[in-house]
Image (cartoon, rainbow, N blue to C red; front, side, top):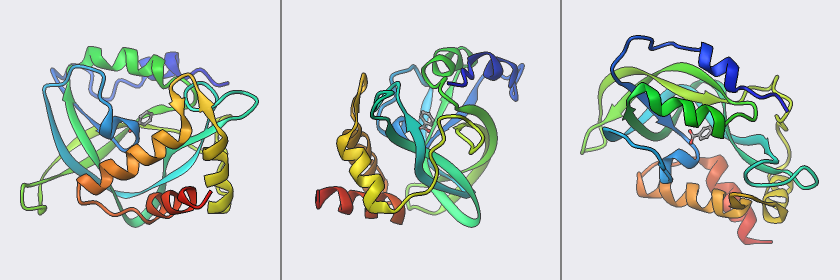
Length: 190
Ligand code: BEZ
């Protein structure tokens, strides 16, 4: 495992800022177990969500790793999620929780107004698991990914709960994501 905790403590993109926007595209959309000042639906451009990161510490085990979300670069795509305005000290526990390959990355967020239109923009942070981290599993047929998710359970619960909660949260945001909704469908067939 690549423990990214110490690396992330050096990735101080917003040093000196009193608050930081953190963009959640996975479990953070529906489960924010940290203090935040404000939360707003937002999207990031140039990224697509994928169940390509392995999880043997949260949603699976070493023997039967689960799969969780990460982002891949895709120039013309947008990825919807939830932005949280936090104070900087909130990041340290997240660095520890997401230590299995996720690194802080700076992105440009676009907030959505009540009517769903793009409103103002701000720089923010994501936690990104890129393909060079040891837990990265990468692309596989959707049926195989769904089967792996159906089989995996970890300390944070069943892997399928993560996928189903994410799909529900995206629907509540009025967002579409073909990868997530197709996986949800494949899972329902198992
Ligand atoms: C997210 O929801 O954005 C997220 C949560 C944990 C690790 C990486 C991303």
